[in-house]
Every structure is written in C-alpha cells, then in structure tokens.
Image 1: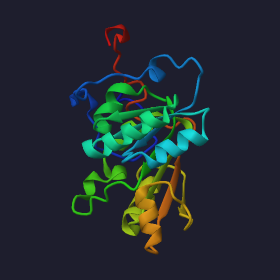
Image 2 (image 1 turned 90 degrees about the vertical axis):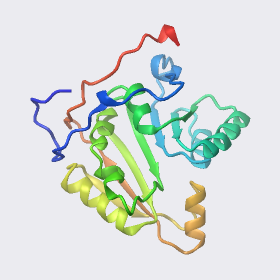
Image 3 (image 1 turned 30 degrees about the vertical axis):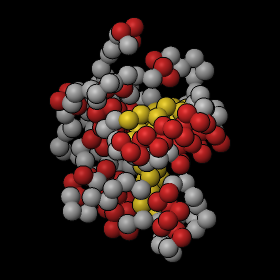
Image 4 (image 1 turned 180 degrees about the vertical axis):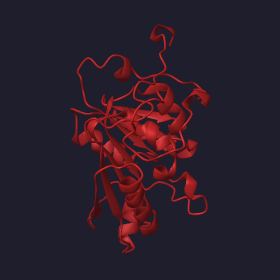
Length: 225
C-alpha cells in the first residue's frame, strides 16, 4: 500500500487487506491468469441463486462475469443452474466476496461491478458497501472509466450511497428508478410486483483516480493450483 500519494477521495480510514486470509479452497479462475480472448472482466457481488448472472452471460457472450455468493444454499442452487447452462464466460464462486477479491483480483482489471440488492444492514450501517473502507480497495480493482452498479429497494440506503459516492468517494454518479418490468434478480421481481420503487446508482471511476491500493496485489504461483 502506498501512503505518500495524493488520493482522489476523502475516505480517511484505510482498509487493511494484508490481514485477510484466502477463502477456504481458494482457486484463481483461469480467466484471471490466462485471458487469451482478452474478454472484459466483470464482477457480481452477492449473486444469490444466479438469476442475473446466468441471464447476463447468455446475453453478453463477449464478456466474462465472475459472480460471487457467500450463502451455501443460494450458491448450490446457482452452481446447479450454471452447470446446466454450461456457459464458458461465467465463474460461480462460493466465498466471502471481500476476502476473495483481495486475493484474486488485480488492480485496474475489472470493467464493471454489480452489487444488486445487497443486505441493507439497517442496524449496522457501517457494513453498507459505500460506508466500508473496503470500497476504496474495490475501486482500485476497477479500470479507469469502469462502473459500479448498485441497486436497492431501500430509499434511505440509496440516499446514503448517492451522498457517499459524491462527497466521500468523489465519483461521478447517476441515480435511476428501475423500470417496473425489470427482472434481473428474484428480489427485483418480488419488489416491483409489490409496487415498490427500486433505485439504481451508476458510479463511474474517472481516469487518473488514485487510491492507496493501486499497486497492491498478491502474487501466486498458479502452477501449484
């Protein structure tokens, strides 16, 4: 981590990636170590049962999605469907997303990150994504002109995320209302069917954006996998 740099954002407390151990059964997918087709790499954090991931890779064969889910029963359902679909541009990962990203993803390597209907953490707002120091590390993995897409049905969560994106992370962002016929996730289908408003925040990383982790990366001998 580099301390003597002029940061683009206003987040004072730094994330400490060196304190995180690799997830159990950790393996780096070949797409990360040997992307022969040079496909744009995307991440989905909290993929659930995989509705968005499976639909996305089917519609975007020229992009590669790594979709991470921590909860075992959701991941098992996702993995079963992914096996049936048998697509080559998807990796379904069962792991804690923070630890996995720290150990697997290189700086400036991801074109887009989806965070769709995360746990609102209403009783623990420090765990909301844009409130966490980890968000700086996540931004360091994003390419220049890359995008984070955050979607929620909790208006207060979105209000805070929009404010943090602007005032703390100093990132250009645009807020949208999700169309009522959108069906990206099971949560989205349920919320919109109930007549709830869902919100989307598109956050862009401008060229030259500086974090403390732009050169921080763990190197592995991939021949030992």
